[in-house]
Image 1 (cartoon, helix red, strand yellow):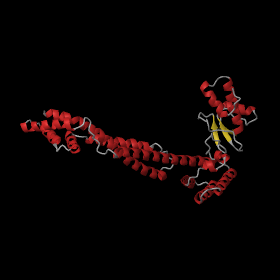
Image 2: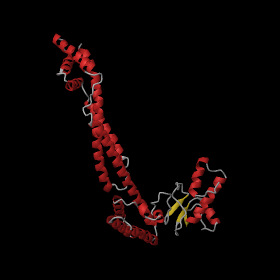
Image 3: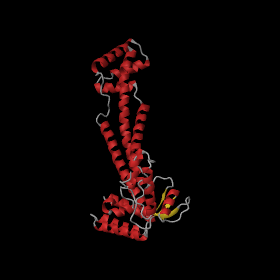
Image 4: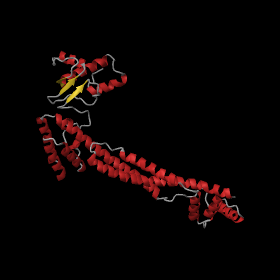
Length: 349
């Protein structure tokens, strides 16, 4: 009889532990997301170039696991389960008293009578699977709130990362851009400022034009962030040629005004495009490119020494060798569409 009482209560204790794990996980996840929000705010100034898009999801996972671990460590004893069921079903502490006597090993006639009453109460007054949730409505709400906060933070961190990426590309482009071209780009920003919908955006665009003429990396980053907060998308207010020059275009970026390396072993897919801008040079490392350029009247190059040559010459040489490779079936079938798309030559075999 004594063991029967414990056997009847223990399954409810296990179900209460499971409910406790879920409840603790949901509440801990909310706390973790609040901490994550603080971290992202601090990182906005301390680590402006760091991509934190995955951070909210990591905090959500860590918070949930920490909550579950805490619940498991605290556990739910048979005595706690008995007291909970007594309160939930108004059993006047019959179960708690019976469990206390059973765990002490009491086999007196009085204890046996208590066991008998508790057993009858469990079998007649408790449903087969009683509700053991202590926060029936709060737990689902807490879980949904934690998920919502996580999604919002990930979205904000993603936008921040894109802003930092835009700043990096613009800074790299400006460093290699001629003074004349830089002035033309600055004028494009001034024209955009005159069409801005609000004063703050207009002022930031005007100030950004000045920063482009006299580059200031820290100030440029602050202005791009301010424009982002003002709802200004540079890809919508700048003309396509300026977007290409600043590497803001969603399509393959032209490297106008920059020195690029061809044939050095790195992947140049989506990075090089023919350009109308003058003064663009590339470093030729591949002896085949050098030979091809020489045959078209280009500079005399030592076949193993990198040297700056006209981009148009290098691009034409690359197209020629790509076409030859395709005709000679030296390009695997799965890569042939990629080569054709890169050179934008639909007549290539």
